[in-house]
Image (tube, rainbow, N blue to C red; front, side, top):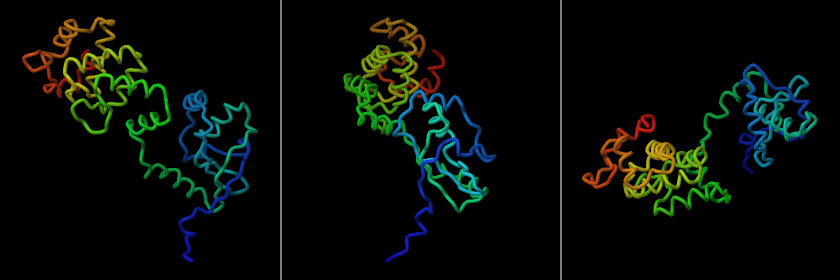
Length: 244
């Protein structure tokens, strides 16, 4: 039988009270209480990962998970609360520092689109509302730019969070109706800029009012003589949100 031991960490798992764990070694980043408090306000038991611990010199040193233990302590109200620990018995201080420094080196972060679609599968209300709103204007959410495709997922969520459903609804309606799904009119900067314009005009950004405002703030790119396309927007898209 092949020996696979070199591919399996030499660890064991144990529930250890938070008060018996030692953190804040020199190689670790400073503890962010703002992060701890924010995570505690949105506490989810299923998001708690095992804490990585190095058992040496009679102490349990946390080298990955110092924020986790503080979040659990804050939510539970006690440092007697135990947490699952993944314990290494063969590390020294230098090994711990090396592991800490390189723990994120080969981690592939999730893209906004991937997070959005996972939330759709999870039945999250906000993402379902945004998707349905986008599709109601014959647009779609995707990863590859194309006619009628919105790749700027973060922009959609940001507008929804900052300005609300109705501003996002009006923003999509104006963009879809004026430029008919042209991909340049659906970029993040453009969506954010139009949303700010909608907010600035306090619900009056529609029809001729929007045409006039768009010419005033964005130039003549929405003029019918240019076939109502956004093909001339690349320069504007990069900075027009700030100009508004």
